[in-house]
Amino acid sequence: MALKVPGIISELQLYCIAIGALVFAASMLFAGWFHYHKAAPILAWFQYVESMLNHHLAGLLGLGSLSWAGHQVHVSLPINQFLNAGVDPKEIPLPHEFILNRDLLAQLYPSFAEGATPFFTLNWSKYAEFLTFRGGLDPVTGGLWLTDIAHHHLAIAILFLIAGHMYKTNRGIGHSLKDILEAHKCPFTG
Image 1 (cartoon, rainbow, N blue to C red):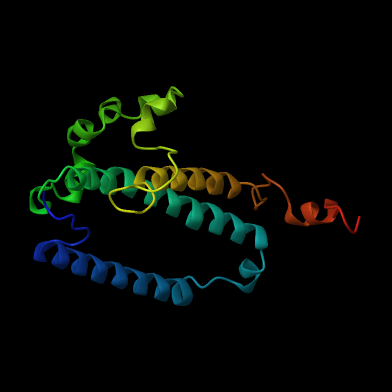
Image 2: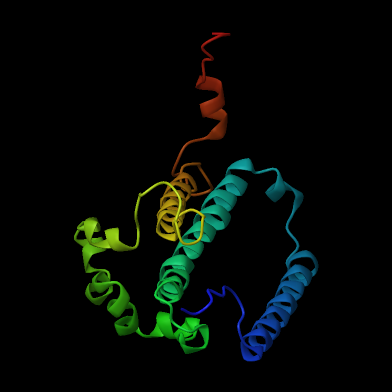
C-alpha cells in the first residue's frame, strides 16, 4: 500500500503554485492601488452599513464557502478516494483533470454522470455519496469526514448567500437595519 501523501508531491506542482501565487499577489496589488487611487470610494460608502453587510455576507462568506465546498467535492474528495484505495500519489491524475473531465469523477462518484439535473429537479439524495452527514471521525485519517465538511460548507454558503440579500440597499429590496433595530423588543428589557 502506498503512503498517503497530502499536498504538493512534485516540483512541477510547487512551481505552478508559486507562479499562480505571484500572479494573484500582483493582481491584488493592482486592485488595491486602483481602488484607493483611481476609483477611491467616498466616506459615505463606508457609513452605509446595509451595503457592507450585503457585500460581506454574500460576497465574502457565501461565495467563499461555496467555492471551498466546490474545491472539496471536485478536487479533494476524488484525490482522497485514490489515496484511500492505495494508489501511488504519482499515479493520481492532476487536480485540474478532475474539474475538466466529468467522466473521471463519474468513475468514483456515479451521480456525477447526471450533472446538475438532480439539483434542478430537487432530487438531492443523488448527491448523498459525496455530501454526507455521517458524524464522527474518519478511521483512516482520524479527522472529520471530508464529505461531511463539504456538506457543511455548502450549507453555510447557502445560508450566507440568502443572508446577503436580506438587507436593503439602493434598490429598495430587503429589510432596513434601522427598522429591524427599532422594532426589536428584548425579552428582558421589554
